Image (cartoon, rainbow over all chains, first blue to last red; front, top):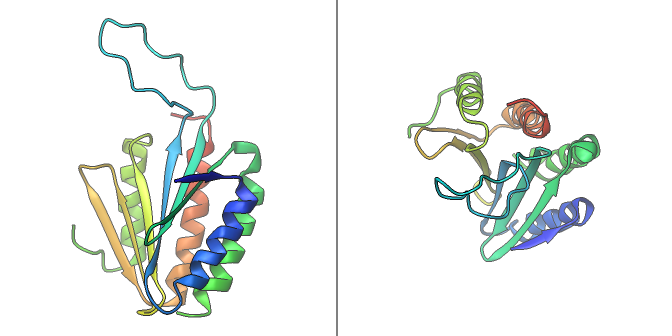
Length: 95
Length: 78
């Protein structure tokens, strides 16, 4: 799993789509992410601090190539426009 | 685990599921170019909703839905 910057993720995703043209499928996963990188403590232990900010974790996979990115709230507009364009260009023309 | 018949039905179920447990839900899209098929799935590891499409019209709707979902995910509520 490679965690990438938003722009780099999109360009890598484009490459994945190109590679999957003949064979294979691209898998994308969207999930809410609050920045937690530790397990939740057992009962009786001090709880983790409340999450500061909600983010969106996006993963993409083609066979064994795995990439991921975290989109922050301030970047969401930019990312959405770029992602929509990518989807329209890659997928919609082909269906 | 059955596929929904229309995107609208899927969207409704997916929204309800997301609002029920926003931190657990994941949304997956699988695109197979050689078969021209797109499968979307949303699950919280208990309930799972799926939808499969081969037409561009539904991809447009899905794009809108993802945009909405991403906005929800980064918003401060819940």
